[in-house]
Length: 279
Image (tube, rainbow, N blue to C red; front, side, top):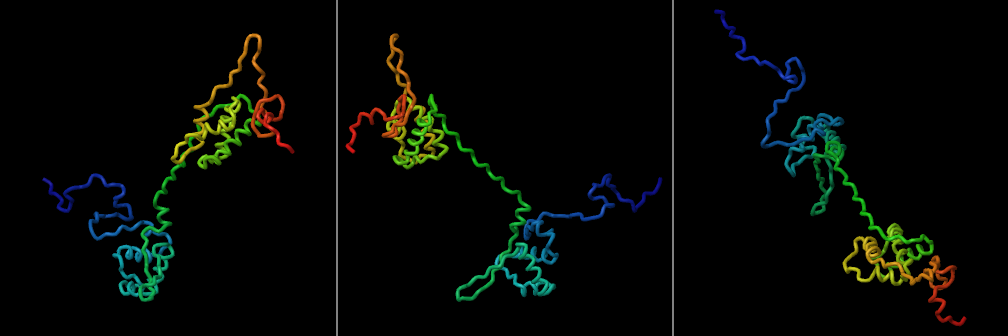
């Protein structure tokens, strides 16, 4: 029988992981999980591209200290061999990059002291290492309900409707409408006016019986009322012998600015029949 080689290992590894291969140089970590007396240090400090090695080490030491520890230059120079000059320069580096802040405070008795604040996550490092919070998109405003449309687009009719809507805030301050809301609602008001409903009657239909609580979307409420309570068109009596009366275009009264139907501009019926004051 052949003799066994006593220097040969009793067990050979059949495979060596690529990152642990003996022919590869570089660092290998032999880490154990800390359960006590440890400090979490961000890589933005441990691997900072602009800080000196002394500043990185000093910053790590300061972050490991308990609250109210003394970290003035003399105390640190007594603790480490680098000396006052180098430690002072390292502290200035940490302050420049936001890892230290110094505040001067006046304490009882009038004496002024310096308080040093250690920042383990300066603003620049936080922005570089933490994902930016997603900005929630602003919700789109809900579209206003549709309103009735008039059968004509007479400028005088739409202008009267617009003026009526703009005047609502004088009767209820909650009904202050934007230009966009007014433009949306005006055709609905015009649809009422062309059905021979007076502006005063339209106004009452819109503002009477409003709820007492604040109106979150007054334009939506008005749009609902214009649609739900739209009166039927006027009916004209007609017979086989007599055709229905002619529907004249809308005119604006020269006396009261009321919209009325007439073949030509002038005054409405109420202004024509009202007694005239002596000049």
